[in-house]
Length: 244
Image 1 (cartoon, helix red, strand yellow):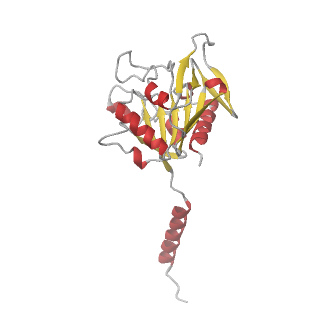
Image 2 (cartoon, rainbow, N blue to C red; image 1 turned 90 degrees about the horizontal axis):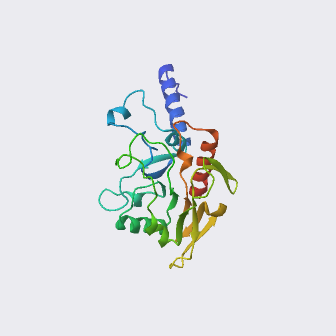
Image 3 (tube, rainbow, N blue to C red; image 1 turned 120 degrees about the vertical axis):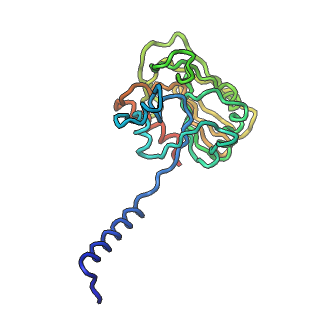
């Protein structure tokens, strides 16, 4: 048996090690992100703030990207939309959807997409931008067309306790503040069914061949630094929404 010289032997061993490591590492799945919240980038006055060496990503992005590759989306339909190339989608307090985007989102879920949607009727997170500034997160979820199409109505109880508190959603415990509640009336489509849970705080929907987990609050994303509670809650909701 011909022996390789030591340098070549080391090189061959290193190549084999790298190849075995590359084959063992499974590629991360992708999650489309469509949000007005500072999840992918922190709030900033200018792009220069985001690219400085001291700039760090928001904690929620770090948590999500342990399991998935986040793909930021600007639109859900039309030129430049890549929704149909994704199997999972995170909508967190999105801007108002155009009629075409409502149609595209509904069709995407029906074709087998997995959706995690946060629709907060009264956002409580602090923002550095004033009311009316386009860079400010959407203060009130305005998603009635798509929610109604799925048989859901988002309500807000002004008499609920003030301040942040914890709510149980099955085996999950999530932080909420000024949360909404979903009520459900069967939609026109026979292949659409939603079940409000935890007193309407969340709705779990089967829509065609797809699934949607819809949360009537977005307080889980609040804060500049994570807490153990928030990390567990976000991981739990993601696992529940995107489970095979």
